[in-house]
Amino acid sequence: MSNPVFYATPAELAGLGPGATFSLDGAEGKHAVTVKRLTVGEPVDVCDGAGLRLVCSVTGAEKGVLNVEVAAVMAEPAHNVQFTLIQALAKGDRDELAIETATELGIDAVVPWQAERSIVRWKMDKAVKGPEKWRQVVAAAAKQARRATIPQVGALVGTAGICELIKAADLALILHEDATESLAVVARAWTAAQAPTESPAPLQLLMIVGPEGGMSDAEVHAFRQAGAQTALLGHHVLRSSTAGPAAVVLLSQELGRW
Image (spheres, rainbow, N blue to C red):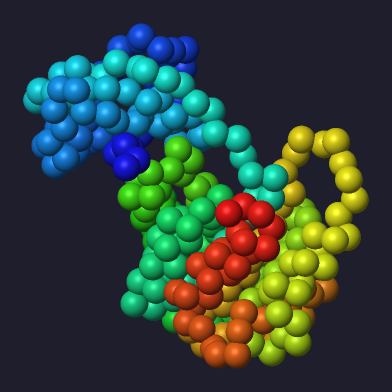
């Protein structure tokens, strides 16, 4: 069974090696001591949210502070293809459900999208508070999945912002019911076309999911003009909360991440 995971900042964990001791406090320490009720001798992982994992054992727990001793340090390498989910804002917290599930399945980054047909609108203060809420959602999901890496959450974007992200990506996929090629076929063709490279930089793959009302023709046209491809997930129309996670599963299998 895997160890429970708690997060500290990269600065707090920098330089720690086997035999070192560390005190986890704040909200994470309180959760470990008060909610999880960890006791002396129990194993626990402390991660920095950026891929560093310290395998530890508890040496003490009191007043919201968990004291641990480091047994091993592991730096988890990034996947050779990084997944970013561009998720349209959706009503009923379906957008949050989408990024929560995608995080558990292994997404690397999420970007909130104010689509033309999004019923939910992030305006003024909400444009700041919305991404922060998403950061809390993905952090909690990453902890649940016991990940060493917490997905990055980008700023709110519109159609023009997505077009810029598409141009910078190696592959951008519009998950759309009118697509003629399946997601698996598109992924295989893209993989076969990749030339061997010695560059250590991972490839960047975007998945674009529309709101409950679907993407407008103008949005799809703009994305295709920027270089994105449409791809079909299956014979049935999926909810906005389901499409992204389904794509993560399929692409993780097709591209060898699983």
